[in-house]
Figure (tube, helix red, strand yellow):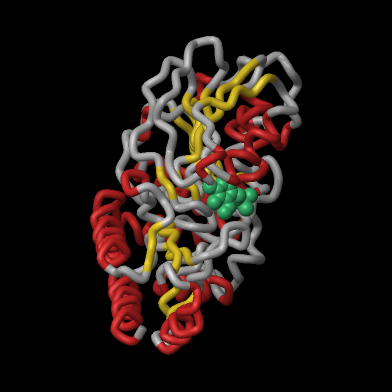
Length: 354
Ligand code: PLP
């Protein structure tokens, strides 16, 4: 029996996508060859890359608006560096909302002055700061849309006159946004898009070419655009599986359709957190993430019983991130509503048995 997988990753995808992906390892498109062995310069693979790049822009409604979609190497962590390499001339503003933004800040500091706006380490990153201003003296503003570890999510992005850069690693393709408000979006594939190993970058071409420094080719967005994400051998399988998953999303009705399901899952889960006295949500209510719900037991003594009930119900991956502890229910696109129903039943059962 398939488990209810609430794990934060890597790579939570629908079973149908895993099935199709596994068939292509043996025989890709009836070619008699594995997807892993065909040349990445062959027409078959070039078509995969082209369709994947095009589908990304379709789903985000960014077609013909001056954007390019790239599939790169190195995970979102390499983008912490690449963003600054390509865009930071003197000074940039960063919203520090947790572990991942802190890491992005650390890398960017190698390239210029970084001003942390609206920071709030005192509150253990349990809410999203809303009061800060960003003027035109900055080269760009960087934020993290969803804080995978702390379970907070930015609901409204600031309207600014400088490029808006966003790390959407853990909520890309999960909710409708006006994606044209962003000038650069990046996301490690491994939550809502595909296997670890490829990273999506969506960039507005007009913001590039403004810094004076030399940029190494592999990290240079303009070169990657010219080479159509094939400056070097791409992560062929990760890109292919991402394409299968993006097709699945499109067939479901796109981001609008998945957002409705994600909202239902989050509402069901958080209403249990709010009525069940044994549990306490971690994030401020208005900033709760629809993707990663963080929570604690009010009484740690109940942990063994709760863990036993989770195991009996075939629930996997509910442990909080090692740096914060507690519990975390990750509800990525591929997690069905029925899994959340099962989890909520277990939480009510605990209340009855405790
Ligand atoms: N940014 C966010 C929001 C993440 O959740 C993660 C990983 O979970 C990263 C960045 C780092 O991604 P990667 O492991 O692809 O470098």
